[in-house]
Image (tube, rainbow, N blue to C red):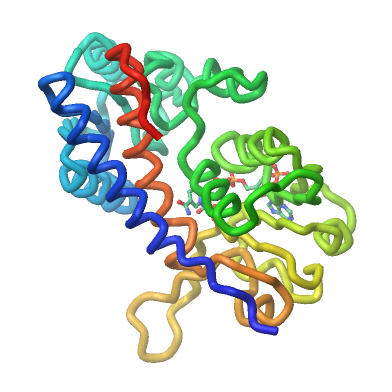
Length: 295
Ligand code: NDP
């Protein structure tokens, strides 16, 4: 059996197109474009790449992108003052502070300062709490993107066994909440889990969010399982390569022979994250303007 390849890139392209339509409608109704403000502190190369691609995607969707690049030695006071200004700016619907922040800045304090109604990353404790108790808020983009891929592939998830490997606040925990909301039976595994292969073996749905290249082996998987690989890991460069290849947390080549469907890396979950960020921003724009959010 060869697993179906879940094409996150194509799904994300469709989602971005839909977001573009919603952005056009929003502009017609409100007389202004929906706006996303992205704050980058310092010069972390990976963060610079992410911020650039978020900017391009935001503009391509017909939305306003406000970029704020601050020097690495920015004080917490100055950063909090900028967040406060963005909270009050009516042209700004969503605020994203690119993580990680330089060590001298307290990430939790900065996230806590973002208005929960503009927290399109869904990292604010208010939004984490809303997700936990089943109220509508903002859900972190990566797990929400995974959920869209799962719903598209499997439809109703009721009663399915789901194993989430990883318990971070930005991926593992919200992923587990979303699966629970969808009536799956959810297990969260982590670095202290005993006999991880046996835990994974019972799963109809496996979500791997660890950050260890090819850790999940084909033999761990149940026949026909749906596998969502969140991990992004760069291998050391092979002979003749300038940069190593990107791989996920799942041994794709082996898993393909056992799984029913699997997301590739790259081209699976990754492209969904920015598409969902754009969608979250538009949802913020509609809600903050008191308009019904279209489907
Ligand atoms: P974290 O480092 O915050 O969390 C990793 C989790 O994996 C922890 O809960 C940890 O357990 C668990 N873990 C570590 N080693 C093992 C092990 N041997 N067995 C079982 N569990 C283990 O990472 P993130 O959640 O932020 O990200 C996870 C991966 O997803 C990374 O590769 C990251 O690059 C990628 N990612 C991809 C995104 C995308 O857009 N595609 C977006 C966000 C992340 P413990 O809690 O016990 O330490």
